[in-house]
Length: 256
Image (cartoon, rainbow, N blue to C red; front, side):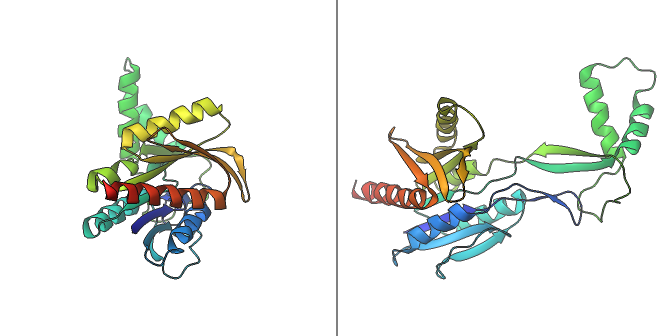
């Protein structure tokens, strides 16, 4: 089998030396890769964030990515060059990227010039804020922002949902998505996981809550499109369960 795994967490630039990132380590993704590689017939490609934990098995093919844009480019390139039996999308992908970074004084001056003497609606003010940010020249990644600035405004914009790409590029691949929430009722977590499955054509979704993750303890629920539900308690159990369920799904589909 050929398996594509994403692992770790993406980082989005604030300037040439600073980033916004998340706490994902890539540990679970690396364990899943190693679980698949126990079978020497399997080939595994890992799209890993630069600081993510790498699989221990040297047969893993590692491709580093940084931000959402580089992840999207790597996914599209790999899935156009290779046919994958399964995709395990465990990476914590940034929901937002930095569009502008602007000192508060510059933004205030631009807004004052734009809206002086006008009768503002909320829609008009939102539009003016956008143009004020643009006029301030708040480009991202071009040089280092001065550390003397007392207050800095960051304007964020949504990033594309990478999980939606996999089935579009390869409709027959077995897709495992991951849903992480924090401090919610289990019913809400399962509802969110089912929504992720339906929207993106996932065959399985691992539902987990941040409050239930500490060290190797990692309580999670693996949902299947066939309405199956498996409760797991450690990262090692999750890795084995993902490998086993995906393998059975691929082998079962191959017999049809």
